[in-house]
Image (cartoon, rainbow, N blue to C red; front, side, top):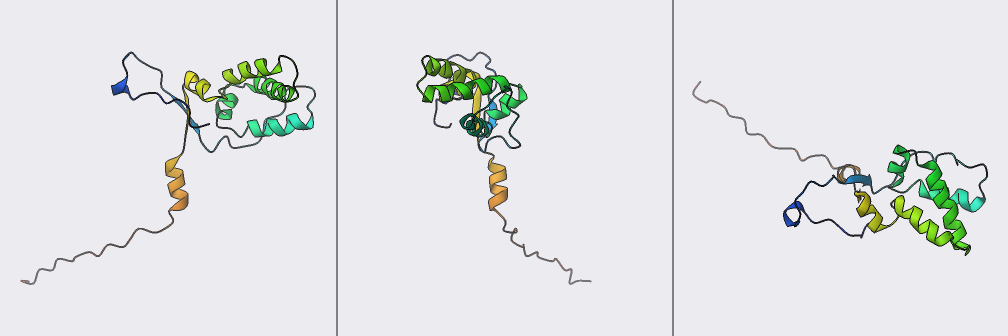
Length: 142
């Protein structure tokens, strides 16, 4: 979810007190199998959305912190909000805020989505390094 507010560099900040570092999330998202649904029942729409949520960059932190039930609750609320259930949208927005689903929430949580530029370069640059001609020094006086 790039495009949100970006903190100023240290030299430009008015307050120079210590700030906790940003947690960097991979732009390519979380890799691996989708976790098991934590509730007793799950419908088809929830299953599809659950799978999509666990591919987001934020899912790296959700998995680290074992926030499966909270993400499942957000998933269920999102679908209820789409269906127009009373109060579901407000609740979904609050849970989504705690999960870092919005740009401002990412900033408040001190999370940033970053691209692994080394991996991208490694994948795209398959050309071998050019061969260098070496000059051989020969002593002709011998």
